[in-house]
Image (spheres, rainbow, N blue to C red):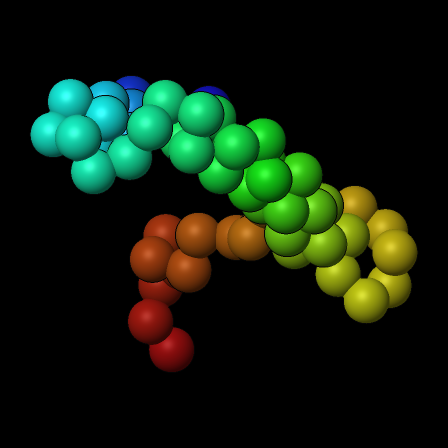
Length: 67
């Protein structure tokens, strides 16, 4: 589960753009609706890779002793 620290500035950015008058609320909503499927597709492709099978999380290499 991701930490909430990156979510705060990510959520504050569109709010700030609307409040400063640089974007309309519908602009921000449209970008959210267009980017969400794109980012979900990238996340899916990252998990499945070329083989089509779900990859497990990568091993933590810092826990292995040096050779």
